[in-house]
Image 1 (tube, one colour):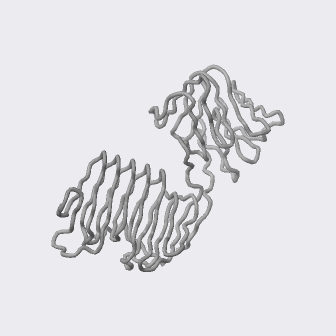
Image 2 (cartoon, rainbow, N blue to C red):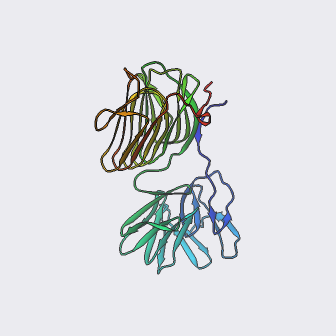
Image 3 (cartoon, helix red, strand yellow):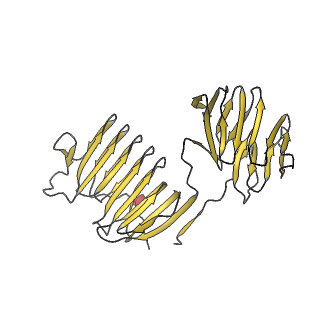
Length: 317
């Protein structure tokens, strides 16, 4: 198995049902089905379904069918005029009624008197005025968080009493177990994990963390603000999501605190000792404590200490 941590290859978007050719350059923005790249080139598909590519002209004007895109020397792109303007990225559409669209290297802004809706999968996701939508590659991002720029499948050695910390704002965290003696990180991530002073720090991961079964004296901290946290756990620690659901299969005799402020808690196979505390049946001294919390989501815990699903086993080198 070869470990890697690398920048993700840009995925060419599909415009009007036509797949654009792959490029090494990064996409800076997509405006009215015109894809702009950071090497001063563009690509689009015309009304006849033909792929059109080229350098952005000196005057910054790109005309495709009845649409004209203006690109200034500062990299600002705008389309103005009455409705009908739309940007399509994958399965999501930004549909604008009246007003202007402006887009720079960081994204698209809709403001002024413009009334706009953002549609994702055919449903309105965000509506209103002064809406800002930022694009990275072919992904629509609402808010202040960009999708992870890197992909990873790499093992990191750990030792007893270390803390494995996984924190993200929007990513979904999956927890699994491995027969090796290292922590393996797999998925998309914003930066490479860092080990320092007994802590393996994993930031902005959307993927899976494989914890070593052979090193039981580890602590786990997994926190996704707006994503889900799921998987198998044998180590004590803290698992939380502010707005997402937490679904855990507990594979070790740990004492559990399961809580939520506005959601629902469901704990299966354990004895409830107080309002939020649960203990494994028939275990006099649990081997640690696991706190599981979701402020606005559902917390589900299933105790099955003698089981390990085959699909979640992985060797670590």
